[in-house]
Amino acid sequence: MARHPARIDTRPVVHYYPVPDPSADVMPVAADLFVYRQHVAEIAQRRERDRILYARWKQRRAERAARDRRNRRILLAVAVPLTVAVLAALVTLGWLLWDAMTGVNGPALIVLVLLGMVAVGGVGHRCITVVQHWH
Image (cartoon, rainbow, N blue to C red; front, side, top):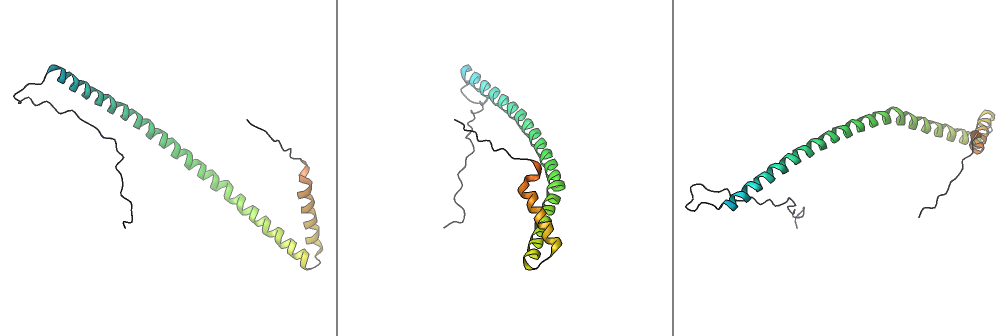
């Protein structure tokens, strides 16, 4: 059994009209030449439109890459130190809790009680839960 499944070619099929041969015994009909020229004009228009769309896409891609670089820089400058600070606070809180539970340590117990009061008290603000029902 193959490791990779057979790939199906999903590219669009492009049909080109045959180029009229000037050395042919039978000269092409004027209607055929008109259709051929119309087809060539359509191809030129499509290529020009695709060139413009590709240039727009390339510009949007460059803008998106610049925005991503800026966001990554901000995240590294803000989120990493904030994460380290939160982890350090959790480790300190765990250490204080362990120290208070295993022995009578006055300062650790006082700090733990104060931190609990701040957490329960909500530091002076109340959250209001808003439930919206959308149809």
